[in-house]
Length: 114
Length: 115
Image 1 (spheres, helix red, strand yellow):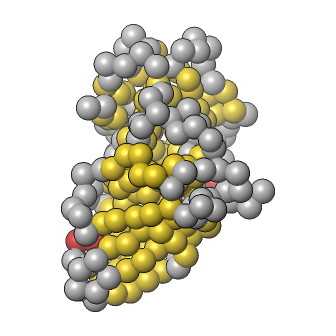
Image 2 (cartoon, helix red, strand yellow):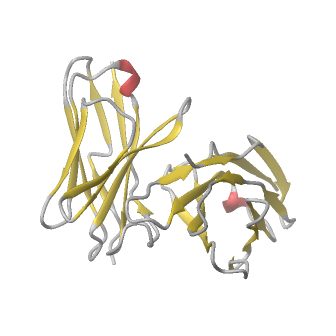
């Protein structure tokens, strides 16, 4: 099976812009989670989607949003970018039931905000 | 709230030797899962090993094994016969068995392997 894929792999934006990141889960996986990784804060949970519904949300401002499509692919959007949004954004997918299955990670999208 | 603590930021091991990475966690729940993930310089997060809290037997995956002490809330990773390819950042992670749970990570530990 193909692994979790994320596009784009690298992105450079300027402050105030918005960005959309995409994640395609492993075939058959219906749960998708997003994480932000920075040197200072480490890995922080953004949100989790299951069957097109947001099931859990981390402590991030409303500028961070996401959605999941019927084919389980997910997108996350960050509006009004700030310098502090520069990070590696990781997507992870798991099988049918969130909380009971292992999450498998994609290669990440490296976002740089100038 | 659950927390995961990895107190050692860096460790080094000689090739072919054994190294143990420490992790402690705090939770009031009885049913949960623990993981060790490896993140090499490529930044791809790779699952190393997983442990279900209800299982008393420690998980093992080839050269990787854990020492799970539920009462002490300790979950250490032992890497035997260390190889150069084991050099990476290792993250300990916790996830409740509940339906809406999230994965909580420790700060990670950087492991270097000396040839």
